[in-house]
Amino acid sequence: MTPVMVEMIVPTVLALVAWVVTLWRIAAEPRRSGHGLAPVGCVFVTWVSAVVLVERLVSDDDVARWVEFGPVVVGLLVSIGVGIFLVRNSATMIRREGRGLVALVPAAVECVLLAGVAGSAVAVGALASEFALFVILLALPLLFAILMIVVELIGFTLYALIYGRLGRVESADVVVVLGAGLSGDEPTPLLAGRVDRGIELFEHSREQGLDPVLVMSGGKGADEVLAEAEAMARYAVRACGCPAPGAVNVA
Image: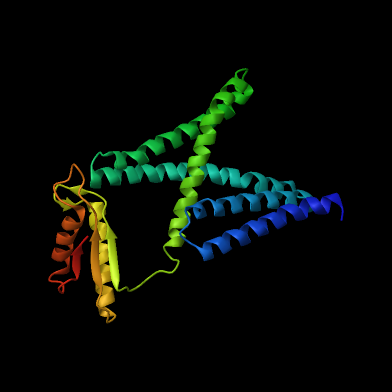
């Protein structure tokens, strides 16, 4: 086997092994938090393999450039898209939850992302100046941090969408809704949405002939007037009408 063949085969085999191991681990235990980053790593290894194969097998320079730099351009566009999404999400969270820490976190991340994009533009523009090395050295730590944030956001968001489809339960004997904070003695819009989804599954389970129990889970914080579970249960009773005895429990 020639060195060129080894150079082509090794990255391809590594990419295949990475995908097989990742898919096997997801199938064995889909709840692992690391699954958010593993598929992103697989995509990166696959890209490296594709670059090596194209350089060795394709003589068309245009195709090679697309394979080599296309993902970089896509990554930049995705970063901008993530920033725009976070801006919209921040506005939605502030409108629903008020100007709390949780609502402002996406806005802070968005500012960091935009700063990273701006830093990339400055670094590229500085390549023609005598301060290029200085600017790039200053920008590298920020760009690396931005890259990690983007990779984690993309990886965990995509896996969250996939995980929502894995073993999806359409009916259940027990439906548990987790607390998330109150506005006075009422669930916030975000928490109310959780309860609404629990009610939807609860009622669907009853339609399937089951006798489900809807359980609200949430304690009482120092700044709350009552337990989250109690407020959620009251909301569920109002939304459900008159549930069967024991259908709504406070936990």
